[in-house]
Image 1 (tube, helix red, strand yellow):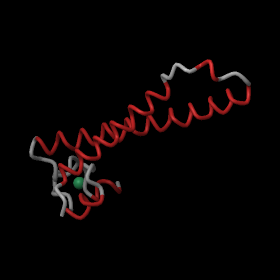
Image 2: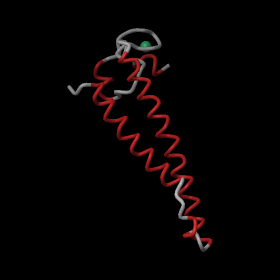
Image 3: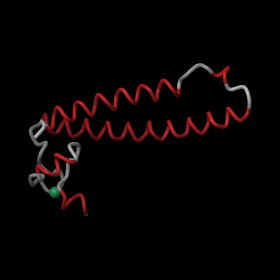
Image 4: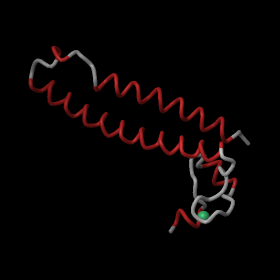
Length: 106
Ligand SMILES: [Zn+2]
């Protein structure tokens, strides 16, 4: 079984790297390339896609940081809702979760 904390840290590093690529894309300064309209339209679509990916990635990152903070406090494998231990198999599949199966389904 892989160590959950190091798994989360790897995930966090991946997402942080991805996020900086999205940010680089959004803040690019190659506006001069958008000459014709068709290109601009594609560009706008891409921007919207990247925008939602960025939002999604930020949310995932926040969840991972939250899970890591709970691990730091020594309550990482306790359900934050009912306080019972989260099934280790669940933590293996969803290392960033902070609630047990029962609470997640409610
Ligand atoms: Zn629970």
